[in-house]
Image 1 (cartoon, chains in turn purple, red, orange, blue):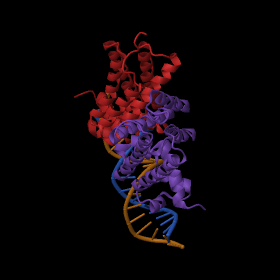
Image 2 (cartoon, chains in turn red, yellow, cyan, brown):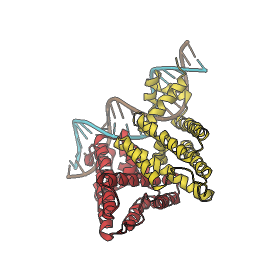
Image 3 (cartoon, chains in turn orange, blue, red, brown):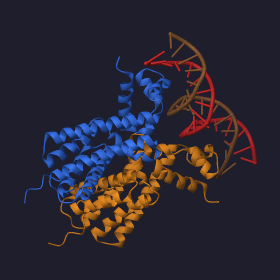
Image 4 (cartoon, chains in turn purple, cyan, green, red):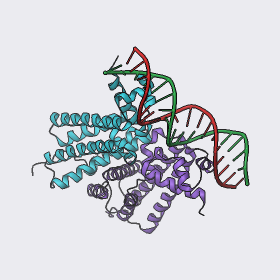
Amino acid sequence: MADTRQEILATARVVVQKKGYGGLSFRDLASATGIKSASVHYYFPTKADLGAELARCYTEQAQQDLDAIAAATTSCGERLRRYAALFRKALADENRMCLCGMLAAEFDSLPKPVRAEVSAFADVNIKWLTRVLADAGMAGGRNALNRWASSIYAAISGAQLLARGRGDIKVFDEAVEFYRKGGLIPRTEKRAS
Amino acid sequence: MADTRQEILATARVVVQKKGYGGLSFRDLASATGIKSASVHYYFPTKADLGAELARCYTEQAQQDLDAIAAATTSCGERLRRYAALFRKALADENRMCLCGMLAAEFDSLPKPVRAEVSAFADVNIKWLTRVLADAGMAGGRNALNRWASSIYAAISGAQLLARGRGDIKVFDEAVEFYRKGGLIPRTEKRAS
DNA sequence: ACCTGAACACCGTTCAAGT
DNA sequence: ACCTGAACACCGTTCAAGT
């Protein structure tokens, strides 16, 4: 019925978000799709091909989500609230992890092409966060804001990881609250002096 | 020469810190130790047994390190500086991850006994951090300090994960610096009013 | 007490063969 | 264009057998 290739990608995405790249099996994918494992290789020659496309599509979707947030509001505080909500959504949806956060943990055992896509996801996130901070008139040069953005991304990723392991989304919410309280995540744009 | 069982544990610890539980192979362990894979099962009946013991020993070591820090200084700022240094050390040592941080990512594909030990590691860290915050007279009840401690642990774990993927320990250092700047990680104990 | 080879069901991958 | 069975070298695991 549905496009087989898309069905494989959709199934695989959820598996990786829950079990990681190592937990992804062509045979499981095949039986979920109603074909044989050898046929999965028709669409994705190797597991690396599948993994790389998975991460690429995920990053593309993230880029669109981020663009939509930036278009919807100019408030730094509100943008970052919606940003955190993206990570929260994965947890709320069957305790899933961000696909690329998951792959980041497996970085050393990942085929090179997959690694590249995982890095690209972090790049997209950090670049967007840097722009949000800059738009809000936060103090610091491009480099300082970039490091700040990295720290925000790292902290939110860590909160997602811990909350997932605890099986308690409140752990995520409370961590983000502390990040905001300390100013790691700005609550609002800098007021014109 | 060396105790075979200890040799297996030592080899396995490094593998898991780099490649994770899924990247750990009894056959690789065997050839590194100079025995056959079936013999590894003599010491560790199942991979779950090995994984659980690995995490248990790692947590035990961490507990000792944390106790040593608490004994060495009463300064909250200095305690937390040394705490972050523990995570930094793994990165400095061949870009390794914290063993239990690694396993936390694989949580869903872990055998139950291993999961329990991974949770115990987070418990030990958060409990210790909570005590450090309380000792420093930080504002908030036990519950608030506990959530604060969770947030610190999550943020530092996330910084380690991102820095590892980036292959750049500076990313870790800079994130911790931002955590301190915002007060997520207290710079020093609260001054008596 | 410690080790082994052989077998089992899994895995990704390849390929010749089918429609 | 899409699918398949069979084979290959991997994996954890078991077990009967060795010393």
